[in-house]
Image (cartoon, rainbow, N blue to C red):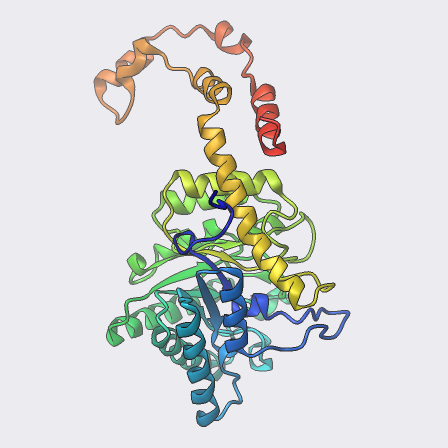
Length: 389
């Protein structure tokens, strides 16, 4: 019998070089795992059955690499891609690690740093296009403040808009088949980051010169850090036609950015996220922006990567069971009541619909008294997830 929890190419499961390549270092501890080359990490992902690999520019080519070193790294990386069959669906730029970006990149108060950030991003876009990336992600890891007096927030928005407009024109001028995806986060590493939620990003996109080529890359942990419902953020992006990419991981509320294995903490939220993506036919990558626990060696990193994909596929199966469970679906049908005599008032406004609604005598007591049966629905959902339905 086919193992339905074994990842297949059509699942489009991807990992970043920075995820499986994480060495376990944290603010309180040094590297635990040895650093592997980009090519070695591609082979690792090929071994666990991933579809693709994504990278920041400096994950692949260090900033200090000579042209000859850069070519050697790219040659080995391309060979690993060919040997494993892995794709590169997405690329991005590291505009946060170098000391030069300690106070931002596109929003820096120093004009030369803003221009350097544009130069670095153009070079990184070229590298992504060379490797076949169709989505380019922007995460403003240092675009924020601790000292509010240091920057005018409207100026910061204007500077970000100017950078994205410039880079959109660059992509069009180069003839690249590429779109942008903007990634929100409320804080960390800055005290307050600009564009802290997916909703902020969606509003901002509509002010750009080419909004049609810019969408969002919501991340489970980032939205959850602020105590927000990630499923609702993704729903808004889907509704707007702007879900160009997604970062899957897990997060406990009120903590630092933990980047746990997908499904490790928030089982019910993870389930409803998978349900939202699958029920709405999302065709993009399922990208796992997470990393293994510091306790693990590289065998544990493989367990982590397999676990992310397996968790998604298990939850996908649970979604199918939810959608075909007679009791759950019957309850949902009962909960979603229609009023036949007002059916003709659905949809857009007309004078006739307005009059029918204004004249209708609603039974307020009946509408106030009946039980919604949400307790039962929630319990049935839990029982399905616990595996007893």
